[in-house]
Amino acid sequence: MKVQELSGSEVIWNSYDQNGKKWFEAEIDLMGLDVVKCSDEATGKYLRKLFKACCQNNSEFLSHWKKYKVDHYLEFPLEWGLGSSSTLIYNMAGWADVNPYHLYFDVEDGSGYDVACAGAEGPLLYTLGDGSIDLSEIDFSPAFKDQVYFAALGKKVDSREAVKQVSKQKPDSKLISKVTNLTNKLQDLKSLSGFESWIDEHEDLIASYISKTPIKKERFQDYWGAVKSLGAWGGDMILITSNKPQAETSKYFESKGIHTLIPFKDLIL
Image (tube, rainbow, N blue to C red; front, side, top):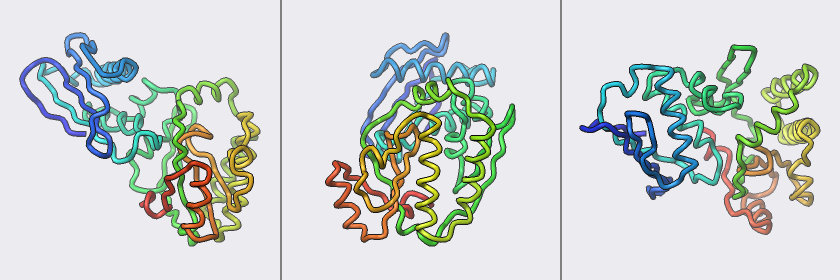
């Protein structure tokens, strides 16, 4: 995110995709943080909500009556669903000099994990407790990482709506304990077959909780590897494993209408 100070009393906002093409623009008046004009009403309303939350968390933010030109750039296709909203929140928190988690919980209803990822330099463990966050970086570079891929499904899922649905049924302590044990177990896996068994167990556990069919059983029953839903389940991205050459793996998913296959090492630094 690039911010320039100019003379005036408004924010000129431009959002660009990974190819430098503008996909959203807006003008926000600083007097009442009203969106004077924008190219998408829903995005404009969300941006106004975010600016108001920044000002509530830091009364000095935008108090000097200057004009700001803000250019926000994505480094990945918007339809991949890799956290464009959480990255925006993290960047806005940095500009407004506020706590990114406080800002997140003022505008969203999720766990805050995606904001932690936006500021992370590598894999991490995240635990949200009662009024507390436990965050720790871990070393996750398994020997089988060359047999792990991410695939973009091209089906954008509204994560906010997914959070609302899940929030209707809070997980009990038994389920939380099972998921925690699985997370801890993941760090010790040494083989691809062990990782695939882990994925199947995790998918079945979450599927039972949210009353949804695991995506492999729903769309890829004839696939030879494991398939794990990510994000809002069944939408943006999946993680897959394969003990076959990448070309053969890509051919299978292309036959299913999926043309973006990303090796683990190309997406996870």
